[in-house]
Amino acid sequence: MTVFTTSLETFEQDVVQASRQRPILVDFWAEWCSPCLVIAPILESVMADLAGAAGLAKLEVDEGENMKLAGHYRVRGFPTVILFVDGEERGRFSGARSRSQVLSFLREHVDIADPV
Image 1 (cartoon, rainbow, N blue to C red):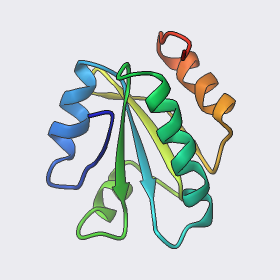
Image 2: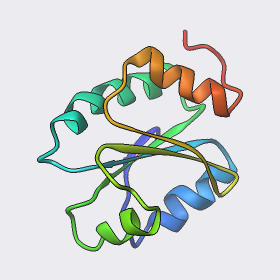
Image 3: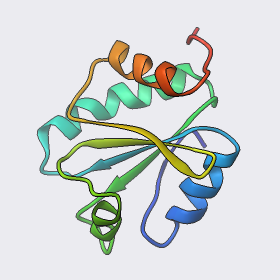
Image 4: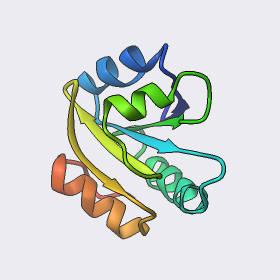
């Protein structure tokens, strides 16, 4: 799956372990957050164009115990997108970004082919 939902209970498997196979972006978002709603389709479009070369985990911070992960990773605002590679954080950005900015961010941190 290229875009999927994760949670406190599944984060280790969904993100940390999975990032040993391919880069995983984690979108820390909230339903009440306007910039979160702006960047979501952009992130999903980039993932679709990368055809599985990277994954996107959606973590709604207001659901259940998920805010604990936001605290653990010192997320200060939403949306915050964190890139995991080989089980570790490789980079992050906060706020809405354009498609080209998201691609630039990915290229800066990992070797990905240009989308088709």
